[in-house]
Image 1 (cartoon, rainbow, N blue to C red):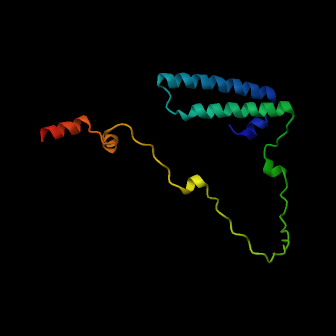
Image 2: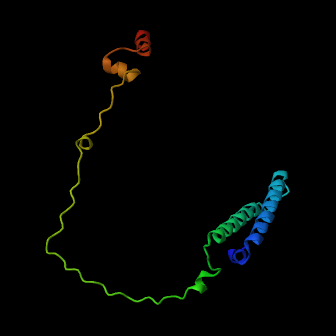
Image 3: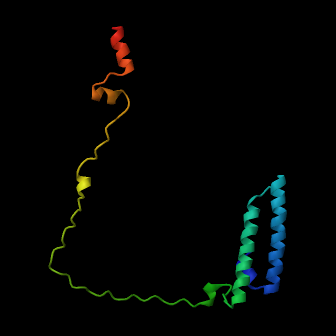
Length: 138
């Protein structure tokens, strides 16, 4: 349902419409649960229609009068070109942006020493069990 149609209705008619839409939403949920619903998009459309109707009820309750067709309600203003103001340019050259180099970013990150595994044992000069087995079998 379009919002223009809803804006033409009175608040009582809108409340009746919301009640009707909620019943329809309830029936659609049951149809979806039982697998009888063929067009599942109807659930979302009904939900949006309910929200649209509630919004218009709240607008009318607050006294916010929104015309049904806002484009036709306001006359279009002709656009006029404004002259650009000429800014005097300075003779000073623009300063080049300096890159900030953090001391920690300049140096590569150091990795922690490995404490486990065959590479760590080899670095320490210790033979692993598998290395000792290979030496013993030769």
